Length: 111
Length: 115
Image (cartoon, rainbow over all chains, first blue to last red; front, top):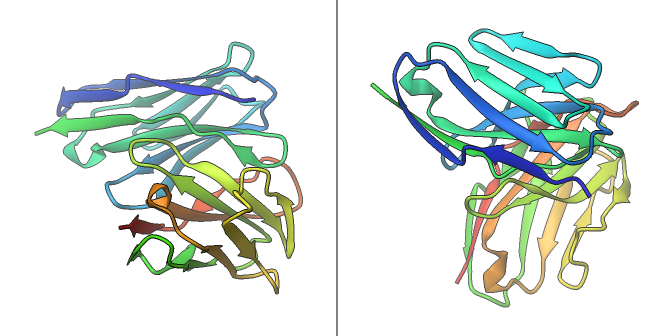
């Protein structure tokens, strides 16, 4: 059974800092991995999908890397802004289109 | 293009009452998922549909939960009777069919409070 761990569980930083959010998973037989953002009381917004054959994927200030063999992914946020404050969730996708979610990293970016 | 639509957004009921949630996926998405999200945790899969067929319902508590997707488009998730521990957010997601590892898109969720 896939198990996903996200570190840190919470993070508070001043505006402008570059951030790294970590995700580790136990079963490396994945098709891809998705990173999501969740604002309080809202659903999940897909940020990046990185295929198992890829090493990284970029969208604007976001960059996700994947090391499938070691069961790790990182989400890098450049030049953080208060609007980036949210919970970030990673979810590897195993057989059957099954996403397994970590507990998330709650990010607060202070002005 | 419209995203995944869910209703209601909020529901408050007393324990032992029935409740139903509705989801309409993104147009053209044949795969539909229902997830349960407890406070402070990541979502957990309850059931997955490929068109009308429930292909993975191993995590659905079948004694009180049921789901249907009769015409392969929208879907309903029901709880009868509701218990206090069912208070959570119920999320619906959809993806394209035809291969593994398709990107999943989520709706806003229904927040259920059982009193």
